[in-house]
Image 1 (cartoon, rainbow, N blue to C red):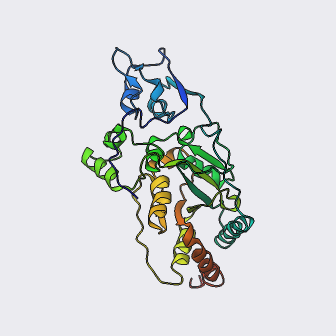
Image 2: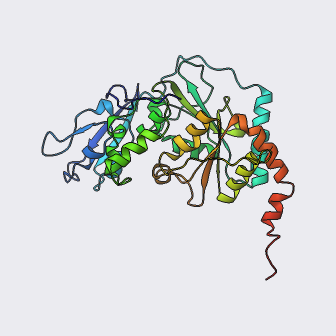
Image 3: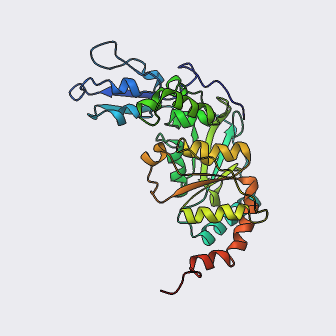
Length: 336
């Protein structure tokens, strides 16, 4: 992993080959200028008495402006550019034995832990590499939303122009970081941190990949993986995550140093930390993933580097023979 200067020009931080129209309804607009303040890429201007759309070509389609508008006066519509990879080389399908292995892992996790949701295979496709045969969605999605869709069975490949969150997209190396996010300014506007110094520290301490080193994120159910995953994400209740932690240390007794902050949960904590360190990591979620998806309040997350999965599956299988059923049967609970 390479730590870099996250400041970015407008051109560097704009997804390629997609455009949006942004409409402001003058009958509803009250000139509060929150759209100007909250837009991470400076699409709007206050050059006149009312906010104006000055740079629609810079729009990400993140709809932060529409979400923050108290009057519902803003509408953002995509106008094209869904597939920047139409002429790109396709990757060979996964060998049957790999597909069968991933399906076995998924079955073990689901059966022993009693998971409701599918474990998710995460693949970050390096720039220029052949692409798996996975559909690019017509809709814009945040990375965390794509993970939530994959746990329900969808297979999704998102190039930069289908990612709706500038923060996660830059963290995962698809683009550079927009200046308002790199400076910490936007986190203060959202009242997520006390000071600009705290916001800048949070941005500085989180890992991120070099811009444009990743061409797309691919997420699928683990049992239906389309590419070699680097990370497996599990969406589960705390008791189930506990058993995954124990499974990972079943043969060593090792205690893990998890890194969680409540910021950038799926992009940093569930994905990038396992991807860059080779260690599992947990996350409690963040403002973005909980505000923009159907994830339940009772769920948390774990990202497991794929190289650790054989150990996790073997350890979980052993725990499932006695420790897990005894614990769930409450064998130490005194008679009432």
